[in-house]
Image (tube, rainbow, N blue to C red):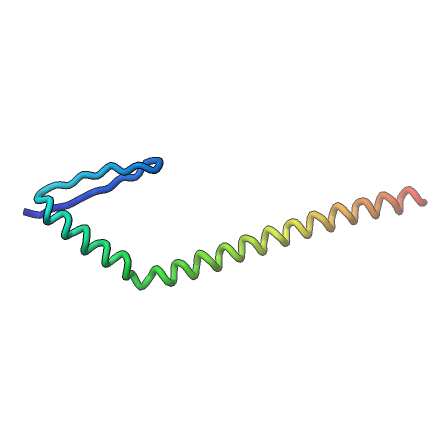
Length: 84
């Protein structure tokens, strides 16, 4: 008989169920765990995540610098207008 298992996570708790033979479901879960832990694509996804985080951070810093410039330049412009 084909065995299967499912695990659903909700707010820090897990709901688990299986169908078929429990020992077979455990073995299937162990095989799945090994596959997931040795997935060669995970290194790429981690690299991509890190790169995206750095790009987002750099963009946010650039936005902040631009806002600071606009604010300072507008103050400078108002001061120059008052002098005239």
